[in-house]
Length: 226
Image 1 (spheres, helix red, strand yellow):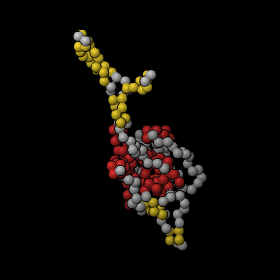
Image 2 (cartoon, helix red, strand yellow; image 1 turned 180 degrees about the vertical axis):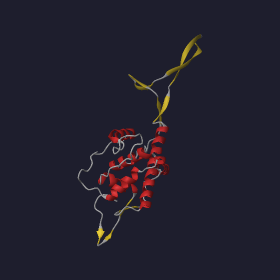
Image 3 (cartoon, one colour; image 1 turned 30 degrees about the horizontal axis):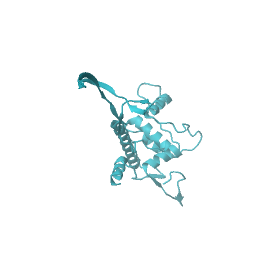
Protein backbone atom coordinates (compact mmCIF):
# COMPACT_ATOMS: atom_id res chain seq x y z
CA UNK A 1 0.00 0.00 0.00
CA UNK A 2 1.30 3.42 -0.91
CA UNK A 3 2.04 5.77 1.96
CA UNK A 4 1.42 8.81 -0.22
CA UNK A 5 -1.83 10.74 -0.43
CA UNK A 6 -4.20 12.36 2.02
CA UNK A 7 -6.17 10.79 4.82
CA UNK A 8 -9.72 10.28 3.57
CA UNK A 9 -13.00 11.08 5.33
CA UNK A 10 -16.61 10.15 4.72
CA UNK A 11 -19.09 12.67 6.13
CA UNK A 12 -18.14 13.39 9.71
CA UNK A 13 -16.63 9.95 10.33
CA UNK A 14 -12.85 9.80 10.06
CA UNK A 15 -11.50 6.85 8.12
CA UNK A 16 -8.15 5.80 9.52
CA UNK A 17 -5.63 4.61 6.98
CA UNK A 18 -4.10 1.30 8.04
CA UNK A 19 -0.35 1.03 7.54
CA UNK A 20 2.28 -1.45 8.61
CA UNK A 21 4.84 0.03 10.96
CA UNK A 22 7.55 0.27 8.27
CA UNK A 23 5.16 2.05 5.89
CA UNK A 24 4.03 4.33 8.74
CA UNK A 25 7.65 5.24 9.52
CA UNK A 26 8.38 5.99 5.87
CA UNK A 27 5.26 8.14 5.65
CA UNK A 28 6.26 10.07 8.79
CA UNK A 29 9.94 10.62 7.99
CA UNK A 30 10.06 10.45 4.18
CA UNK A 31 6.74 12.00 3.13
CA UNK A 32 5.93 14.27 6.08
CA UNK A 33 9.63 14.86 6.85
CA UNK A 34 9.06 14.63 10.59
CA UNK A 35 12.14 15.45 12.64
CA UNK A 36 13.67 13.15 15.24
CA UNK A 37 13.81 15.19 18.44
CA UNK A 38 16.53 13.57 20.53
CA UNK A 39 16.43 13.76 24.34
CA UNK A 40 18.71 16.20 26.13
CA UNK A 41 22.24 15.18 27.00
CA UNK A 42 23.07 14.32 30.57
CA UNK A 43 26.56 15.80 30.59
CA UNK A 44 25.62 19.25 31.82
CA UNK A 45 25.41 20.83 28.37
CA UNK A 46 23.44 24.01 27.93
CA UNK A 47 19.69 23.49 27.99
CA UNK A 48 17.68 23.53 24.80
CA UNK A 49 20.41 22.29 22.46
CA UNK A 50 19.76 18.55 22.76
CA UNK A 51 22.57 16.51 21.28
CA UNK A 52 23.62 19.07 18.72
CA UNK A 53 24.21 18.67 15.01
CA UNK A 54 27.76 17.36 15.46
CA UNK A 55 26.54 14.49 17.65
CA UNK A 56 23.76 13.54 15.23
CA UNK A 57 26.11 13.59 12.23
CA UNK A 58 28.61 11.47 14.17
CA UNK A 59 25.93 8.90 14.93
CA UNK A 60 24.84 8.87 11.30
CA UNK A 61 28.43 8.32 10.20
CA UNK A 62 28.81 5.43 12.66
CA UNK A 63 25.63 3.88 11.26
CA UNK A 64 26.80 4.30 7.70
CA UNK A 65 23.58 6.18 6.85
CA UNK A 66 23.49 8.87 4.22
CA UNK A 67 21.24 11.77 5.02
CA UNK A 68 18.39 11.97 2.50
CA UNK A 69 17.79 15.65 1.84
CA UNK A 70 18.66 16.84 5.30
CA UNK A 71 16.45 19.95 5.23
CA UNK A 72 13.55 20.67 7.54
CA UNK A 73 10.24 21.55 5.93
CA UNK A 74 10.58 25.23 6.80
CA UNK A 75 7.18 26.87 7.13
CA UNK A 76 5.29 23.79 5.96
CA UNK A 77 2.83 21.54 7.71
CA UNK A 78 3.83 18.25 9.32
CA UNK A 79 0.96 15.93 10.10
CA UNK A 80 0.44 15.52 13.89
CA UNK A 81 0.37 11.73 13.51
CA UNK A 82 3.82 11.90 11.89
CA UNK A 83 5.11 13.92 14.84
CA UNK A 84 3.71 11.32 17.26
CA UNK A 85 5.46 8.55 15.33
CA UNK A 86 8.73 10.49 15.41
CA UNK A 87 8.37 11.14 19.14
CA UNK A 88 7.77 7.44 19.74
CA UNK A 89 10.94 6.55 17.83
CA UNK A 90 12.92 9.14 19.84
CA UNK A 91 11.94 7.28 23.03
CA UNK A 92 13.66 4.07 21.97
CA UNK A 93 14.80 2.26 25.16
CA UNK A 94 18.47 1.54 25.76
CA UNK A 95 17.72 -2.20 25.76
CA UNK A 96 16.93 -1.90 22.04
CA UNK A 97 19.79 0.41 21.13
CA UNK A 98 18.52 3.73 22.47
CA UNK A 99 19.40 6.89 20.56
CA UNK A 100 21.63 5.13 18.07
CA UNK A 101 18.84 2.77 17.05
CA UNK A 102 16.33 5.64 16.97
CA UNK A 103 18.56 7.47 14.47
CA UNK A 104 18.99 4.33 12.39
CA UNK A 105 15.25 3.66 12.27
CA UNK A 106 14.52 7.26 11.28
CA UNK A 107 17.22 7.52 8.62
CA UNK A 108 16.37 4.17 7.03
CA UNK A 109 12.71 5.20 6.92
CA UNK A 110 13.66 8.57 5.41
CA UNK A 111 15.62 6.77 2.69
CA UNK A 112 12.93 4.12 2.17
CA UNK A 113 15.42 1.36 2.96
CA UNK A 114 15.87 -1.65 5.20
CA UNK A 115 19.18 -2.72 6.77
CA UNK A 116 21.47 -4.64 4.45
CA UNK A 117 21.38 -8.24 5.70
CA UNK A 118 23.60 -9.34 2.80
CA UNK A 119 21.01 -11.33 0.85
CA UNK A 120 22.35 -14.10 -1.35
CA UNK A 121 25.88 -13.71 -0.02
CA UNK A 122 27.77 -16.97 0.53
CA UNK A 123 31.29 -17.10 2.03
CA UNK A 124 33.92 -18.25 -0.47
CA UNK A 125 37.31 -19.73 0.27
CA UNK A 126 39.82 -17.54 -1.57
CA UNK A 127 43.60 -17.04 -1.47
CA UNK A 128 44.73 -14.55 1.13
CA UNK A 129 46.98 -12.89 -1.46
CA UNK A 130 47.38 -13.14 -5.21
CA UNK A 131 49.98 -12.08 -7.74
CA UNK A 132 49.95 -11.49 -11.46
CA UNK A 133 52.45 -12.88 -13.97
CA UNK A 134 52.49 -13.89 -17.61
CA UNK A 135 50.17 -16.77 -16.80
CA UNK A 136 47.54 -14.54 -15.20
CA UNK A 137 46.49 -14.18 -11.59
CA UNK A 138 47.89 -16.81 -9.24
CA UNK A 139 47.59 -17.54 -5.57
CA UNK A 140 50.60 -16.35 -3.60
CA UNK A 141 52.36 -19.14 -1.73
CA UNK A 142 54.54 -18.88 1.35
CA UNK A 143 57.30 -21.11 2.70
CA UNK A 144 56.09 -23.10 5.70
CA UNK A 145 59.11 -25.35 6.16
CA UNK A 146 61.82 -27.39 4.47
CA UNK A 147 62.31 -31.06 3.79
CA UNK A 148 65.31 -33.22 2.84
CA UNK A 149 64.63 -35.38 -0.21
CA UNK A 150 66.83 -37.67 -2.27
CA UNK A 151 66.74 -37.10 -6.01
CA UNK A 152 69.05 -38.72 -8.55
CA UNK A 153 71.14 -40.13 -5.77
CA UNK A 154 71.67 -36.78 -4.06
CA UNK A 155 70.08 -35.29 -0.97
CA UNK A 156 68.55 -31.90 -1.49
CA UNK A 157 66.70 -29.40 0.70
CA UNK A 158 63.41 -28.31 -0.79
CA UNK A 159 60.97 -25.71 0.43
CA UNK A 160 57.46 -26.66 1.50
CA UNK A 161 54.97 -24.18 0.09
CA UNK A 162 51.41 -23.47 1.14
CA UNK A 163 48.73 -21.09 -0.03
CA UNK A 164 47.08 -19.21 2.87
CA UNK A 165 43.34 -18.87 2.36
CA UNK A 166 40.54 -16.90 3.95
CA UNK A 167 36.77 -16.63 3.75
CA UNK A 168 35.28 -13.63 1.91
CA UNK A 169 33.05 -12.25 3.11
CA UNK A 170 33.85 -13.74 6.48
CA UNK A 171 30.92 -15.64 8.01
CA UNK A 172 31.06 -13.28 10.99
CA UNK A 173 30.46 -10.32 8.67
CA UNK A 174 27.28 -11.95 7.41
CA UNK A 175 26.21 -12.91 10.94
CA UNK A 176 26.85 -9.34 12.14
CA UNK A 177 24.76 -7.86 9.31
CA UNK A 178 21.90 -10.20 10.15
CA UNK A 179 22.10 -9.43 13.86
CA UNK A 180 21.82 -5.76 12.89
CA UNK A 181 18.70 -6.52 10.86
CA UNK A 182 17.19 -8.44 13.80
CA UNK A 183 17.90 -5.52 16.13
CA UNK A 184 16.17 -3.16 13.69
CA UNK A 185 13.20 -5.54 13.45
CA UNK A 186 12.86 -5.64 17.25
CA UNK A 187 12.97 -1.83 17.32
CA UNK A 188 10.16 -1.63 14.75
CA UNK A 189 8.15 -4.15 16.75
CA UNK A 190 8.57 -1.95 19.85
CA UNK A 191 7.47 1.16 17.90
CA UNK A 192 4.42 -0.68 16.57
CA UNK A 193 3.41 -1.89 20.04
CA UNK A 194 4.00 1.57 21.53
CA UNK A 195 1.85 3.31 18.94
CA UNK A 196 -0.92 0.75 19.40
CA UNK A 197 -0.83 1.03 23.18
CA UNK A 198 -0.66 4.83 23.15
CA UNK A 199 -3.78 5.24 21.02
CA UNK A 200 -2.77 8.80 20.11
CA UNK A 201 -2.87 8.52 16.32
CA UNK A 202 -5.95 10.21 14.89
CA UNK A 203 -5.92 9.47 11.19
CA UNK A 204 -3.40 6.66 10.82
CA UNK A 205 -3.73 3.18 12.24
CA UNK A 206 -0.64 1.02 12.58
CA UNK A 207 -1.66 -2.57 11.91
CA UNK A 208 0.12 -5.84 12.71
CA UNK A 209 2.06 -6.02 9.41
CA UNK A 210 5.81 -6.33 9.94
CA UNK A 211 8.83 -6.92 7.71
CA UNK A 212 10.04 -10.52 7.65
CA UNK A 213 11.81 -11.30 10.91
CA UNK A 214 14.53 -13.43 9.27
CA UNK A 215 14.23 -13.09 5.49
CA UNK A 216 17.45 -15.07 4.94
CA UNK A 217 15.74 -18.22 6.26
CA UNK A 218 13.03 -17.90 3.60
CA UNK A 219 15.71 -17.29 0.96
CA UNK A 220 17.70 -20.34 2.06
CA UNK A 221 14.63 -22.58 2.05
CA UNK A 222 13.73 -21.40 -1.44
CA UNK A 223 17.25 -22.20 -2.67
CA UNK A 224 17.06 -25.72 -1.16
CA UNK A 225 13.69 -26.43 -2.82
CA UNK A 226 15.03 -25.39 -6.22
